[in-house]
Length: 323
Image 1 (spheres, helix red, strand yellow):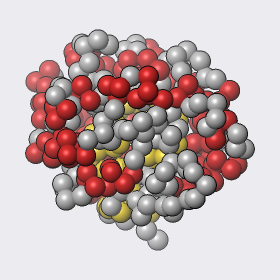
Image 2: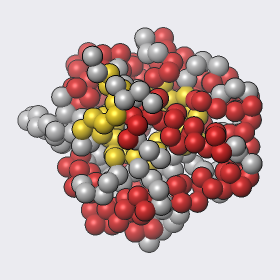
Image 3: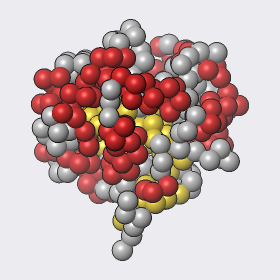
Image 4: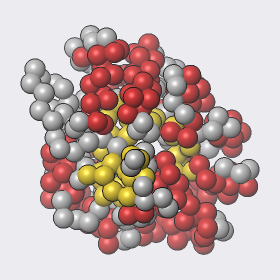
């Protein structure tokens, strides 16, 4: 790996060679916001429990985790820093926004101009994450900077607000060079997201379409991957969506089609009932401790498993280049 390229973690920039085994989409802290108001199970708000959960990830072999909670929906950079400190786990935080339905009509996303919000988002990558998610008149920046930009859309549609926020994420990526990761609702609108983000100037290798395995249609996945982007499978053990073997079949098929170098995997354990320290399951330790070995047992080539958890994340999240 090229050590002149770095990833941006909440404790500073590190060479991609130090990234190690990576969970590309997960959650270690979530407090408040529309998602939690609708369903309290989405709250992940006990520092001690989240720290135990993160330590279990480390003990199972995990080295880097991407916390995908964006602006205005319960993100907390200060508790996240405290949770991660001393665990030995590299945490990547994100800026940007979730789907439009999570933002009340009084939120600034409805009121500020695109260029204004683009500057706010870009500053979180370049200067530091605003500790209160820009929810007050005083801007106070954390020393931690965002390592990726998020955008999202709803089920089978992209609303006018989501169109606006996708443009903002794209323009912020172009300005900062940080990668863009998306939320698709039930795996819909992934192709449309990829095409839109590319049209706003983002290079395809800086785009990852998330949750695509919630719609485990190989034809769709091939269409999206032909755009030159990454795709992320992040509900790898949620039987309410599909079986583990369906995800593994998708991985093998996409690799056979030549797309193995553009696959990422995350747990997206975004509910307290998914985390062992909160009394749930399967926990942050599942992917490094169980799923990776299940992949090999099923017949996924070991080289591909290494790509998905080491090489692909390093290539996708590495955007800081020394000159």
